[in-house]
Image 1 (tube, rainbow, N blue to C red):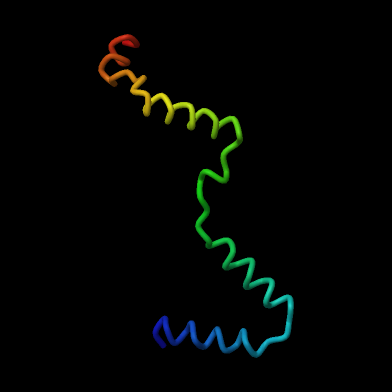
Image 2 (cartoon, rainbow, N blue to C red):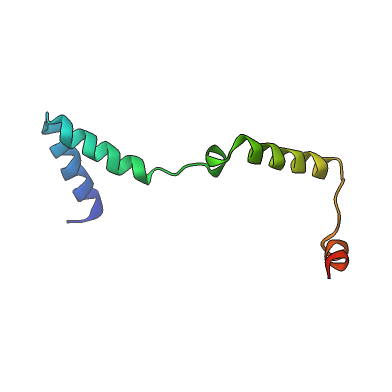
Length: 73
């Protein structure tokens, strides 16, 4: 059985069940697989720092890598 057939078979089984525990278990399993945006996991302080850095870049208030490293070696 290929992956598409497996998915159809599982969908049919899901449609036939009335067991809320099974439905909730499937929801939990599939919910863990959903991609999340890293931004949503950042604290307000971290978001503010990133936004401030973006603003500095937009205003061209940056330092080259070479100049930065030269001052720290």
